[in-house]
Image 1 (tube, helix red, strand yellow):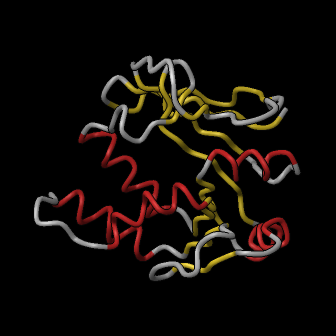
Image 2 (cartoon, helix red, strand yellow):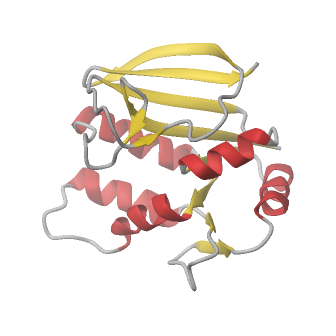
Length: 176
């Protein structure tokens, strides 16, 4: 049975903003290892569209960028979206019953499935499918943006805290 894990970079005031701050080199290498170690990913539409950047190599990419792109492209992905007509390589579009697909993936796969997207994480959390939330807190206060928890706050218990890199701490929570 798979373990569904939500991992996201977050500001100190709880916002997700992919342009407000970025991981430094050490944290970026950490993310490469996280992607390599995951069995699969389940994406919401918005974050998937952001991540599609990694499908097309860029001349300015470093070795770490190329390593991340290779790991991301190799990983099987499911994308929950009703407004997309198609998805990229190694990805499956889920335009219908996301809950049924998520339950099947949880039952059929082994290892960690990375769940990405605040709305998707909220909906899967509400039905009890999220096993862990890993929040990577950056020393940044944004005061605006998309909140990490987009709806009713789940009851959580802290299971781990770990300094990662670049003044970032990862707090890991499980449903209470």
